[in-house]
Image (cartoon, rainbow, N blue to C red; front, side):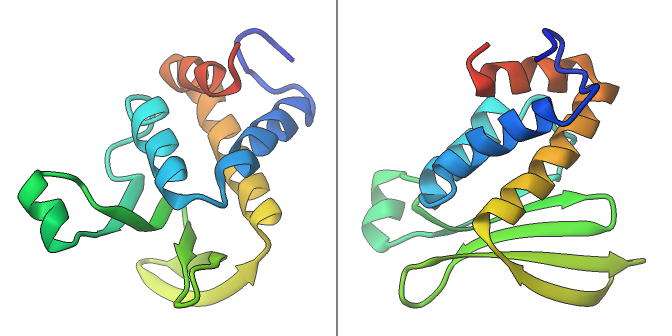
Length: 139
């Protein structure tokens, strides 16, 4: 893997995807990864975390439990959310000029791969993103 995370082959994307898949089953952990480890490197508004806050969460000043994470990249929104049974569902939403043209359920592995591709592309454009991804991968 390149030290500056500038992908020249698929190895960086594969490593990023593997790191992302490791946490994908737990939305709270995933939300923390995207909003703390990568937040400073990602453009504002790229990551949205939807939380369910109980009364005790509000009274204690806790953020609540993450129920959905959305990552907006170009004309695609990558959604990871829990369904009513508590299972994690992954979805790719394609938009054209703000209008949703398709929604496709995908595996968590496919979702993580798509997110890794977008993050690797962002790392090629930004040193901050490259540094944040290096932190995510433990480099």
